[in-house]
Image: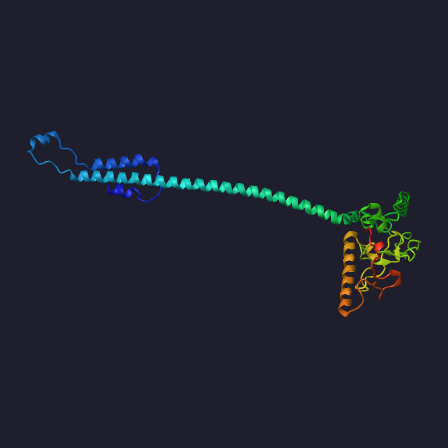
Length: 316
């Protein structure tokens, strides 16, 4: 019995059901072996009557073995209960993990869809803003790349249609339409894009027009010069607030790729310059801000002047 007691682990570890019969058999065998052997019949008959042998030690051993067996069964039951609890917790953890994984998959799919929508919206917006630059990047021609005959054909075809010189939506036309992009960037001995005077007419007696690159709405800057090839009125002097190293609007027209963005920048510079000069005059108690500005400007540029009421609408 003591050896069997030492052989049985009394820890809280889980016991398998398969070892229960072997444990019970071992305890029973030990209990049987501890019992005293029976006396032979001849010895019993010849010997005088004697008191019955004391079997208390065997009974105590049997009880101890049974108690150990009962304790092993109880430990097995406790281990099974603990194992069931662990299995239930594990199942709950697995179910929770699966639910979290499903939520993560759904959130990932939604995030991908949202990213695709954002990319599409951003690309559409950028395509609208940079459409001119994209066209120019593919259609820019250097000297000798586009023959003069092709430029002649483009201009003659537009003259027959009544769309030359371009008077409406000039910025968009020279930014997006491929034939006008070729004209704007083509340089040769015949087409040199030099500034020439705007011809005077009965309707335009002073020979001035708003610059197409900086004028918009009521804020205009008149010029007496236009491009000899594009026939577009463009400033040939920097703005009053710009230094002499700044490119003129005539140079920017023939060098920039995105005319829309360049027009916005030039118009903001013109507007900001006028507002700053107006605030300076008001602080000094000078002339009214609506008075025409001619100080420091050449006569052929017409100065930085405000458009007349009948000339306030300009199509760029």
